[in-house]
Length: 346
Ligand SMILES: *Cc1c(COP(=O)(O)O)cnc(C)c1O
Image (cartoon, rainbow, N blue to C red; front, side, top):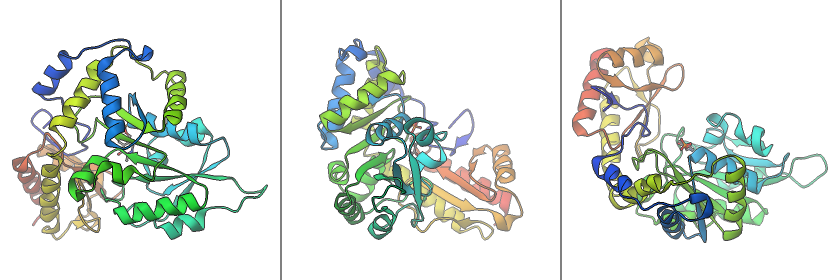
């Protein structure tokens, strides 16, 4: 909820719970930049272990994790291969071009998931003309793809293809733990083929700030230098890391509730003849739907819902996205369903 609204715009709108605030208030802290914040050090070590990597670095945001990974892996003019819907293309201010100077090669995957064959076909032969194919990126779950979970077999096959072609591999794991909870596949198994991988704490895990990027000790050393250069080094950020540790203890298993609520919301959308669910299936906490049949634009529908106390974001001319999270319970989903029916008709 945000005020009196049911806020389904994103899983970033959650506010820290009382217990999380308590953990933050009690955090032991030090100067993070000097490696002296015990809570940050504990979070980095815990995430690295969870992902099966040697080391991790705490960063202010997931976007900074992606951009630093690209900066470490790629030289200017090299090519990054990813799905056309990837966050690094749509939502990071052109960061790959502006920061790493990388070319981006978008693949036309299905629901945000590309195949090993598509990846292999996109790798360019080494020549003086072509950009050097350097890195492949997987987004687990795929956000714009509809919260799609990349199947483990696809990830492993993509990993083998990347290796066979000498590509490095990076996972944007903003919602990796949603995939873990839903599929029962261990985070380290999903992460195994990747040279770098990160998880976000400010999405479904309900923290105010933060993400941890993990990889080899050498990769993290290089990432640290970029963190310093970009001004991402912090001081007593154990206050923030404490929220992350609290979330790992208390907010992971409950992601299953968000997925159940998303499925229930998707059922309500399916039941309304003028709305069309805009994804193959509901794997996690994201529900995209199309409103073209209502005669309303997505932003008009969004405004009409807001007047009924429900916030759902417009993502295109007729496309909207509803996201379930910690601050949305089953009753709130019912409220959203009723508002949708009242606006578009049953
Ligand atoms: C939110 C998101 C990011 C960026 O994370 P921030 O913490 O908001 O910077 C990156 N990738 C995906 C798939 C996301 O959904």
